[in-house]
Length: 302
Length: 260
Image (cartoon, rainbow over all chains, first blue to last red; front, side):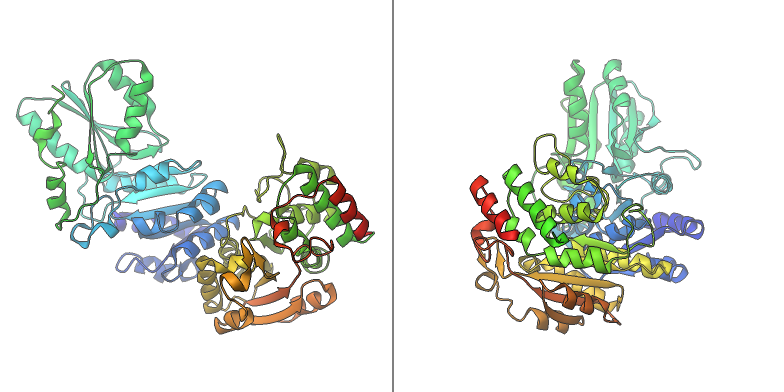
């Protein structure tokens, strides 16, 4: 996804002189081509994330569209108050581009995980929160960011995510994408769990169970209408995300269900509210936390 | 009456009427603001969004009343707006909101943010060949914030010669004497060691300040401005409690008498 991000940005930077990229010293093997082409619209602030966000705000106040690129914890949490005041409060055209959704950095350990980021970013007024699930969604969201007014957080996978959608699909900020229809359960995924959701849908299809799969590339503004439609269809709803079970996709869906006045079977599949102290790849950790095996989808729902 | 006296009167009225805090922090920067807004900054109150303008950021945003009063005195907006400071259904909040009034360049109030924002503006000016200059006023207590030094490092690395920082060195902060909390008596050496062109001055001497602002710079410049918290009102000067207290009617009368 990060390669799609930078390739899409480079194309736009050729025609839009307002585009500016900042990194607090990350982006090796990702940003080089951009730096080569636009050296006067790039800045490495050094390993100083608070300053990076403040500088981005100053550039945005001067008319730039500023992309700040780093690993997710360092572009959201390390500098959260700068994001809150300098970016969100002043409602500026700063895009926080974080790489490493969920437990992408697996064996690197929890310092590098992004498992609370959706919760803390979606609570900020003015902030748009985008969590693309495949390279197609990533490219579309980056394209929308060129014209969007106000701050955005873009949560990227670490790389290697396969395309789930067809090329040529247009994705809007605030709109879900239905990947396939189904009649036994509605599975809503966000971010890098789209691939997993697709695998589950295929698995259960082969087992004679029909899964409606919905991808949520935007968490804020949230596509309330599609959730209301599912509620009214009577399908059980399951959410799937590589994020703490508190505050992310599942919470956003739960809020809509709770206020809908209708009863519906509902389950959140997410990382439990713990920091892992065991070591392993993203795949290993997903299995450990019950985010991998398809059997979990229907447990307690049907 | 002089403009600095008018600004002090406005501050006293605003903070007394709204029963708000930080009057000492406001009174210490009146000459700094006056020198900037009446002598140094290339600005047009009738066209506050001119892209070629000089920009000023009050990083110690708790002294907002001083900036609002100065902007009104300089003609950015009607002085009547000052009556809406820090009250129910007001317009001007206690910490700066850039949407509140013309001339406020950035929202500040949490310390350690303003210099980074100023750097971003200065970098944008450089990149565009914009002749505008950027000025950022920080508190001395604010220099406890690590983020200030992140910005200090980057500015000298980039040799930004279009940014000037001013430290309001009034030697008092939230809970006592600055040197008793975090010793920074070598304030000017700290900035120099980070590669800034550093000057010390009496922060209540506009002629001297104007002269230093005018010195040609080849990199970032800082003025360590020695000031007195509560300057101009004898019973507020250099007293910690006036970081918090609001003058009652009797104290307001005495303060206003002292000014005239």
